[in-house]
Amino acid sequence: MTMPFEEVAQLITDALEGATCEVTDLGGGNHLGLDIAWPGFEGQILLKQHKMVLEILRPHMDGGTGEIHAVQIKTIIS
Image (cartoon, rainbow, N blue to C red; front, top):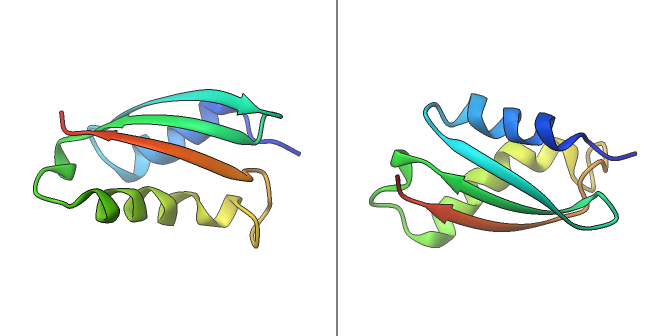
């Protein structure tokens, strides 16, 4: 089972108020590319930015529901 891309984007924008998120399919519907712009990334190192996103998605990844298998994250300070 895969999660609709709109739901993935909504999870992120709900958790990171003021963020925008674009989701693309990198294969199979469960390998996702995420482009996330959020002012809250300001002052955070890249690793911390990515960890923030992964914590939001973790319940839906392997070990959780498994709807998301892998993500490629691009964070942008907006």
